[in-house]
Each structure stands twice: as structure tokens, then as C-alpha cells.
Length: 68
Image (cartoon, rainbow, N blue to C red):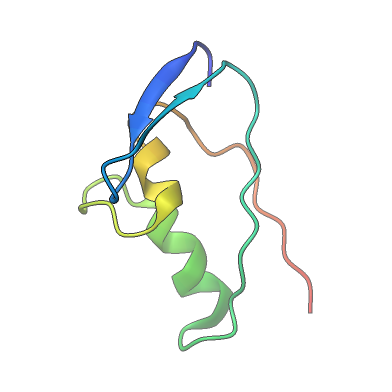
């Protein structure tokens, strides 16, 4: 994120996040695999489902990594 932001998540807790880089780590063992798992955080149109989704208005993805 290029500047500090306050982010309110599903639990209605608000977190003050400083500017900087944030890393998200998750698994992709469910149906759809890596493609489906990576598409959700990258889709800015839907309502927030996961905690990472609440950063969508403030942050932009830079890279994606995966391994077996």
C-alpha cells in the first residue's frame, strides 16, 4: 500500500495498517486449484469474502507464486 490505511474486516474490527508491502499465504487444494484460488483476491467486483479481500480498495497485487 502506498499510504497508511484503516481497514475494517468482516468481524467489524478496524486495523490501522502502515504503508508498505503485505504478503498473503494460502492454500489451493480445494476445487479449482490455483486458478480459482488466485482469481478471488484479484476480482475487485465482488463483495469481500476472505480477510485479504478487504485490502482490495487500498492495495494492488504485484506477483503470485505457487508450488506443489
